[in-house]
Amino acid sequence: MRHRSMLPKDLLPEQMHITFTERPFPQKQGADWSIPPRVINDYDLFLCSSGSAVFRVKDTDYRLTKGEALLVPPDTVFSARHGGDGRFEAVAQHFTIDIVGRYDLFSLIRYEAHVRFDEAWPFVAEVLRFYVASWEPDGSMLSGHAHFLTLLTHFLERAYRGDRAEAGEQEMFIVDMAHVFQTRFASQDVMFQAMDRSPYSRDHTTRLFREHMGVTPKQYLIQTRMRAAREMLQQGCSVKEAAFATGHRDELYFSRLFKQKTGTAPSVYHAGV
Image (cartoon, rainbow, N blue to C red; front, side, top):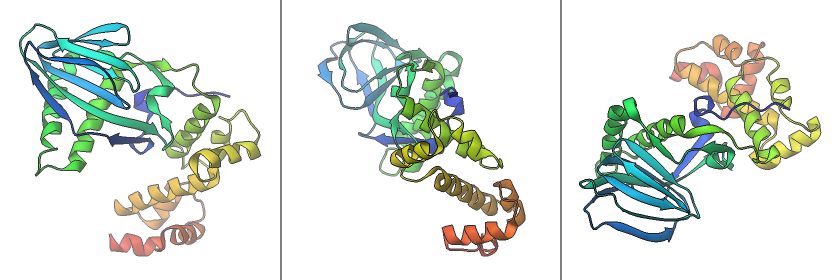
């Protein structure tokens, strides 16, 4: 069995599901500011734009300064105090993140909790400003989600240190299979490529995949191909182009399958765009 890397650049947006458990919390704190020891049940990402603070997470101290971020994991005792350098300004966001609807991303990787953005900070700071503004009464939750995904991606690119060796074998190969389907759906032998990730027999792999993902590998591949075909038709591709680009050699079979799965013939769908 071969596992691919879980590097952030390898993940697709549709593989990640982010849930905001609270609104973003902008902080502008003076020298008397502190957070007493507490435990949270989700992730808390702090992004500092001015001053400094000292966080104690478990038994480790982190000094958070301008242009840096700190991730506090769930079910972890942490505390914080002002760092003594001017007003401490930061944004804190509570969230959860899972991969392919099933697994906590951070449980699958090794990462540094404390990162510095360096040359990327001017861009990150601007996105952070727009992110906070997106939560105003007249803001857009859609743009807020997109802005936070950008912030989290920049954090992950700097924090990632490799896959977690102790991650469950089933978890890793199922995530891997889903990634193969989503990135190689046009290939004629994509099912073989995906199944090759599993250490088990084809039948047992199919049962495990369905148990974890809710559908069989074949059904998952069909769903992925139909979603890609809809996007291609929306972008102006012909039915024939969409069929061949999603791994279907028979245009007629593709049309029947598309109508069966979406309720609309691809020619009608294309004409209605």
